[in-house]
Length: 127
Image (cartoon, rainbow, N blue to C red; front, side, top):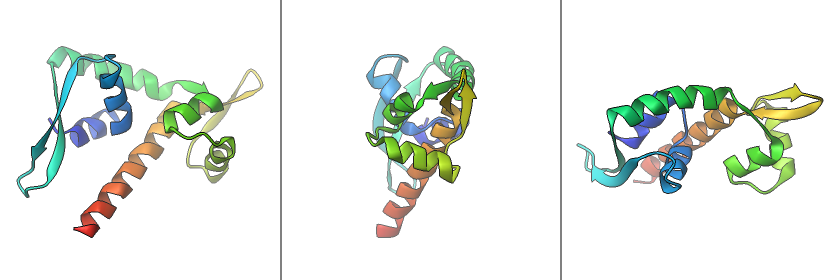
């Protein structure tokens, strides 16, 4: 299955899925293949059981909330101000939990997926 398809199906960024595989949190294999249009695409092999687990887990994961520090780790960004900017711009959603600002993981994943799509569009434009 193309990694792009799994990403869209689960509503998780490719970055998150690959990180989970690298950390052996899910049992799957990644490899490269060629599309019908002769483009390199990332493929993923996983069992039906793993897919079912991911579908359930992804829904719960998207509903979770994390601290801004954890949001920076997920986004692989170091700058605290960048997270605040994303919140103010509405690019990621925040909620108040026990008088602390928390970031909704699903909104982080949506932001990452948007960035991945934009990067793919730029790569296609270059070719």
